[in-house]
Structures are given as structure tokens and as C-alpha cells.
Image (tube, rainbow, N blue to C red; front, side, top):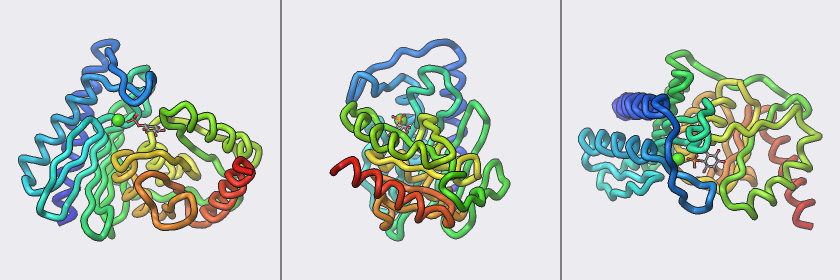
Length: 263
Ligand code: IPD
Ligand code: CA
């Protein structure tokens, strides 16, 4: 069952990503704004979501679908799809390479399958619960890092200026403790890069289910620990993702920094 879902997710992520990349290569794209003047959407976000929703609806008419650009369909099968047609729309707009098409599905036991496709790099991250995680078909695992000062940490800031400023202050308390910080601009890419050892850890809050669902399966199946900011079971709005050996230290470091910030 999960293998059928994964085949569908992978094939739709690839087709939508190919269409978006072709569109982007034809020149600059216009953007409308959403929750803030810098939260943007392009015709390719909408077109990718249309392709994906049509594909899922045709193959699995009883599944529920939730998409960033407005898709919202109830279902009766117990399977629920969470779609980010372009994760990293600002990167897409600026023609930076780290954006993805992210398609995840969950059932009543939690996240089940995920496909995260990076069209510019032609990289497909895939995972199904209990079946490992892969990058272009090769098994992946996180880097074996055991100390915070060797940890390359990724984060994201979201679109709300106040939240950005607050998170910036927390990050300022942390930057001197880690190897360095990266802000690649697409949550799903950050999480998949931790899963394959290109980054060591990732922390962000203010997320949506479509940012995280697919990549969470990839990270968990690759052997990463995924929790919320307090070390509990992951929630859709925040994530701390790291190799198991370093995860408790990443959590503790963030806990301290947030406490100091809120004092
Ligand atoms: C955003 C990106 C960004 C993250 C934001 C997300 P979008 O998604 O993943 O890295 O920091 O929280 O909303 O808007 O580009 O699809
Ligand atoms: Ca998006």
C-alpha cells in the first residue's frame, strides 16, 4: 500500500517540478503576495498544485488533500495528502536552486510516505514508513556528528517580521556555539539535507503541515530524530531534526537560548 502511494507521490513531484523548472527557465516570473509583502506565490506554484491535485484525485478519489495554495478536499479513505507545490518560492522567484516540490501522505498512524523533488539538481528524496529513505534510489543516512561545535545547523525564519526578529535573536545566541548556520530557504530541503548528511541539524517553528510532512518521513526513515522544540513528538508547526547522537544537545542549546531570550 505505502509503495503505491510513494510511486504516485514521486511521479507527481517529478512531473510538477519539471513543469515549474521549464517555466522558470523561460524567464523571470511575476509574483502575487499572500500573508506578508514577502510571502509570495507565482503562477507556477498554482500550476504545480493543480497538476498534483488532479493526479491524486484521479488515482485516489477517496483521499483527503491539503495544499499550500488552497487545495482542501475531505476524504473517506483515512489517507491524507499534504502538498507544497513549490517549497522555497522565494528561491524559485530569485532563481536560487534550493526549492522543491514536496508531497507527503499520512494515515491514522502518522506520516507514511514522502517525496521531495529538487528540479534544479534533479534530486529526488523518497521514503515510506518502515522502508528507509533514498536519494535518487540510493539509501541515505545522517552524518555522524557528536559535538555541537561541529554541528552545521540550518534554520528558517518564516514570513512574519516580528517572528523573524525574535528567531534572529535566538539564533544570535547560538551562532557562536555551532560550526556555522545555514538558511537555505526551503524547509523540506533543509530536512532532507540533514537526512543525507549535507547538514547536521535543522530547527524551525511557524511551519505548516505541507512544509514538513514529506521531509519528515525522509528524515525519520534515514535515522534522524524528529521532535518539536520541547523534545516531544513532532507537531506540524515546528521541528528539531538531527542525527540521534546530537539531537539532545541541539534541543538543550535551543531551550537555553529561548529561555534567555524570554527572560
Ligand atoms: C517556506 C520555506 C522557508 C521556511 C518557511 C516556509 P514556502 O515555504 O520552507 O524555508 O522558512 O517557514 O513557509 O513559502 O517557500 O513554500
Ligand atoms: Ca510553497
